[in-house]
Length: 224
Length: 224
DNA sequence: CCAACGACTATACACGCGAGTAGTCTGCTA
DNA sequence: TAGCAGACTACTCGCGTGTATAGTCGTTGG
Image (cartoon, rainbow over the protein chains, first blue to last red):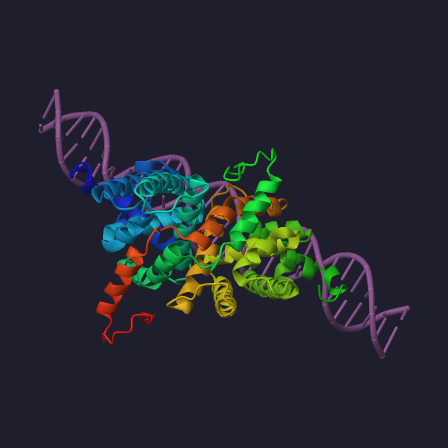
């Protein structure tokens, strides 16, 4: 958003074109391709940003900020479920893919995003546990991290397995993904997969036996 | 393995070096870096394989075959849990990372591997359900695919978030990952996260109402 | 013994990349 | 109206890449 005046300039168009290009084809997208998408010369990137790295840094910051805004706009949506709402719009889908690319790429922006998600998930889960909607965990922090990794990772694999990402119909792709995974997700979250707790009990007793000071209490998390 | 005689040749060393290089630094690893790792000249790649693409194809086939062998060697291990056993050895960890890189890269090998895993998970789950160890799902195929995507995706995110992959101590990294995720996994699989089935019930009734011919039966999977 | 073959190296080529330079055009301001 | 600052382009450079060619060395079979 920011000033509408600024958004007409080549700088903003270049930035947006870079976000689209990075999301569509990954961060190996060349400056020339980005410039062509923006309808300007490649040298303009240097003029405005200095280097590809700084261009990307601005894209990262922009996407993270827009994600934050979009998240705040749709308040009271579970952190783990934000992704179910996000890609409904073209803008949301674009942010979504960009973020997934960042995680796939292993960049700092990806790490930042994951950490944000983990913090959100932890806060939301704590509230849900307090309200009696979610069962408590023996290690809430580990569960929040684990569930974020699974959610993001699942979408990432699904994205990576598609030969080409059509940014246009990404909402449709996302909708299909949701249709495929909603039932297994709800089943797993509601009913689990094991019929009894023998596996969990085994692990808990094993872990209790191997804790450095076997102080008896089993609910203590392992060292991180 | 194969013939020990063949494994002494530069071709095999080149292939193994490529597998290591691809696993450690991704498939952008240059031919010169691979050749240096193998202790040979870069031109030898062309002499033996013709092109980088064909070298990678042979790496893919080799890794998939070695994975298959390693899997058959450790029989009666749950398909979804194979990964808990795999990276205990250096060889297993190497295969593991290579496969994750393939998925991350979106290559055909990655797709093949995912499909293999899905088929294995489906077969294993069917058996476990029949033996009363695992609760049945309303869509077994969707659950198998979902759980594989989650398991692989979770490890992929974990891998991507690490700045550098030290192949040497990958078993240690993997062990740490397991230590972090084992408890949340078992908790989720045993106890779920929701305290009641209202979310699932809502979705089921919603889906039943929106099925093309509302034939009453709710357990039918959606169109894939 | 020697000729032929295959493993292997050194060097070169063409290409695409990010980055750098010089210069043009445009719009605002004094 | 003069001039100046900034947006923008065309062109160039060095580098690393995959690929291609020519040639060397050791081994092996007739």
